[in-house]
Image (cartoon, rainbow, N blue to C red; front, side, top):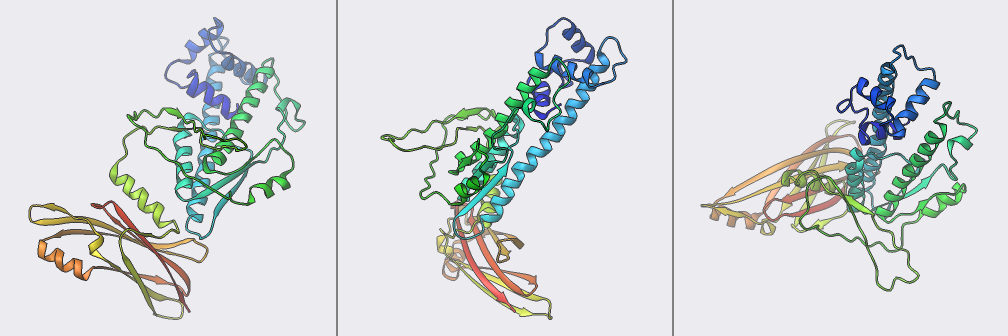
Length: 394
């Protein structure tokens, strides 16, 4: 059983989800001809493949099909999560590198069930925020149906026609995700072509112009539903428009603390500098032995750029300061996150505005070249700072 058919029978038609129907109930419905062709096709194929059915009523065969569907669904879910997770990992890795950032994804595609739609949305959102373009190539080239493919065994039951058509539908859906990743990030999608060398040359360059458009939906319902997007351009003669086809609404309201953590994490792994808050960064090191050194990163924040909330006789704010180290290739080495809680009387605030705030972090590292990145987030002002630096330790 394929992942596509397992998803259809378990998640969409819900025959095999283990909640709506027992094995006996399904057997009765099948005998009365009251089920979708998808289930009877898989039953016929299971019987043709020699599945054991010791119960004349057919209950045993239903049980075997249910088990196989669960196995196919579990394996397919794992493969899809790995694929999307890999895209997110690569985006996170190259977002810390300078210059234009482009990924070329060569893949036969993969299926997205409803449970993975939000994961795809997160991957697209992460790439857009990190200014990463995803170009995709369908490695299958000119795809043929399994029935016409000499390398495929094919089906052995009278349901072969139905199951072959289902495979063709699955192949199109697998290709769709490659198109969505490319179109959603301003990339190119190479498909329906066996010239893979030309395909690799085509997406090698970043688009000359990239425009990022965003909007905030009004009266958004947190129901996880899909919303189509339509973007039009006036006087678009001779132009080709590539945009995201839609988005999935979240299942719950955004938690401000979770949103802040995501914002900080994405900024740490980005390469861009942000100067909403003036920050000066200095480094020094001394060797403890031939193989180790202590590297100190000293960050000095100008408190005049911070915003405080007055409560009774105190001026309150919370700063999150993250100091990270990366190797020359942008690989994460180490990092320290520090929360600075400020509850200051007026006179103390005046003094701090004049002197600033110092945050010093120490790392034990081996000799080499390191890129340091300091990110500061001001909770009350909802502003950030991000500074880069480098140090060579002989």
